[in-house]
Image (cartoon, rainbow, N blue to C red; front, side):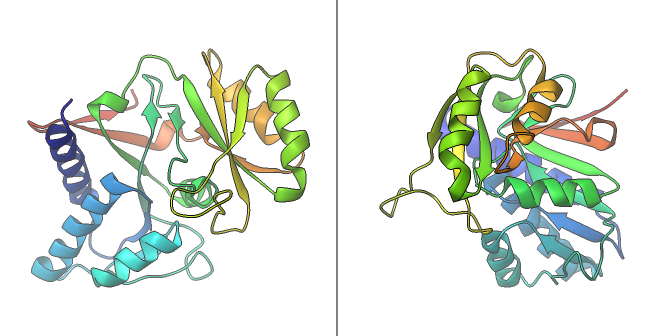
Length: 232
């Protein structure tokens, strides 16, 4: 998919997801470029339709963008249960298992996903795969990084601390931790691997999202339009 087509696909998916929002909802606002298109369309609907909503952001970056778009914000302290969460994914398989965390916000994204009655995942069609594979991010407390990486290797993964692009040294999450990217050649049992990774001492969360398949709707975008896929 060409870059321009990919951007159109993201835009189509994000804007389509905004149509799931109803007046009075409390929303989880995910992190990432596709979710940003959802927020832009949500802001348009707030302005044109007078929607009354509140959004719980999953990252500092999302909070900044929401304020720029004049989307009202709230916290999980205010609303521990959410009506709907909209977020992106790095990969989504046919069983609605996800890999997330490219934006280093996976822990807060998982908290928000758990709090939401419904989870809408927006992604371009290239991210929809038969089986998950590749890089699974972990959020790890710095003190535990070295032994956690040994444990990942014992599970068949190849770990690496994610380095910053515009800074020297590791990426630091909004929670003050490292991101360890773990490459797996294949992931035949995503739910089992999620459990094993999150049991490693010092791992705060894992980028595999397998617990929310029953409440997940996938909005897959292409340059021509979108396809809404729901669990049967």
